Image 1 (tube, rainbow, N blue to C red):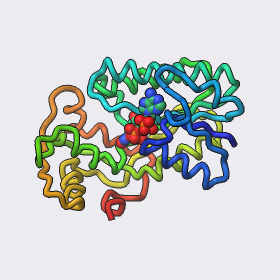
Image 2: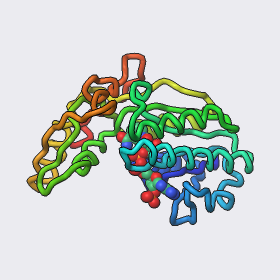
Image 3: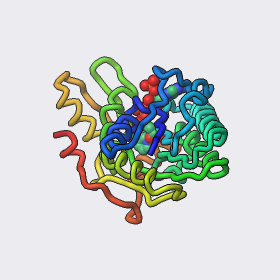
Length: 244
Ligand SMILES: NC(=O)c1ccc[n+]([C@@H]2O[C@H](COP(=O)([O-])OP(=O)(O)OC[C@H]3O[C@@H](n4cnc5c(N)ncnc54)[C@H](OP(=O)(O)O)[C@@H]3O)[C@@H](O)[C@H]2O)c1
């Protein structure tokens, strides 16, 4: 199959590109280097003709609901319109476990993305996954003062991005499937402890402090809704194994 990947240079995107190529698919990377701006839609018309599916793994890093909403709406509607113009028959996207419980901040954009896909012109598949193991490393940079990183206090059930990529490429091959079973990792972890382990592994002397976050996101972190429930499919690679 010919698979176009938006966000191909990102954490999930690079893993999907690698797995799709391993399985013998032809991959088209919708990257800035290839002349694509996913927010404006520039460059898509040159690269989408002939694609069987688009996997959207674009992302923005923001805690602003307005910025997240604007980004995911622009990227999703731009991709779907270009897919419709070029007869691409399958849009595959990755969302996040637990977002029904959190309307605030970054998650507002993920709600907008899911709505645009469900009401859009292209047959689709949507997987919700928990945070990747890499989230622990990313969290060290969220709020940093010198050698101290303040990390949101709460639980996650992180999953290996390689297992997420396998599920996404499986979906591409299966064809439009709608919303499928959520995917989460094998163990519930405290984000602060994950971040401390990553910091120790780096060996830079970074101190990590857990900070209870205000608002809907902070409540979701503490309540455990981001860990998903036992209806979810469970990956096998633990955070410790990933770290090793
Ligand atoms: N990270 C997690 O723990 C997690 C968990 C569950 C679901 N998800 C979802 O998975 C998806 C991917 O997340 P990720 O963490 O893998 O993302 P990421 O590592 O932050 O990568 C984001 C990608 O989007 C690209 N991008 C952003 N703006 C662009 C633009 N205007 N034009 C072209 N490319 C643009 C980036 O390209 P450049 O490199 O050129 O900037 C990069 O390839 C997101 O929808 C996220 O919500 C993430």
